[in-house]
Image (cartoon, rainbow, N blue to C red):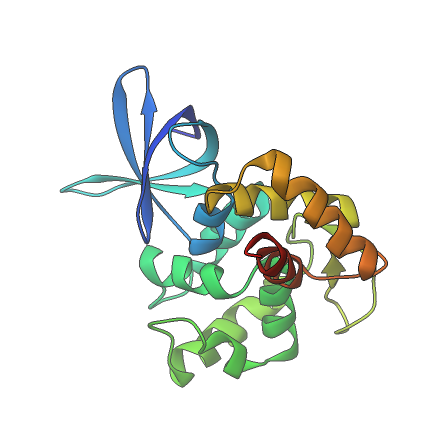
Length: 207
């Protein structure tokens, strides 16, 4: 089984990418969040991989961090949640928000993902609520929130790194993106979500 791939990022599409490892191009399906933090082709990229073997195909699903892969595995244990739906969920809900949605029984948050209706959202909540405890989020825990569920927030350092990666994937040079990201985080005194950092940084970079 393939557990990870490290090679040149040859191509990025809406829901997949191609990674060239030693002249062999591997087609890897991924969430929009993972694709957003990949470097700009043809730079070197590393993705964690979940290999799914079917009768008619061997499919590779890529993840930027181990927590997202762990949640992908957990989501696909629910009847009606295939790989495509799991990636759709992870595209709109990063692990901390997904944990919060399931722990609090917030079906509305889950239905933001394509292919997830109210009935499937209820099934996800029912089957996974007791399995959330101990699941990784890839961020530093702060505690509080739903009983039995650890809600986490990113550190300023991790937000800055992720934001620079995302902006690099959008075509900006790291050298120009880094100082802008740092200024945005400083304005918010280090307490800011990744989406807001990227949004504000894009405004400055576009000027």
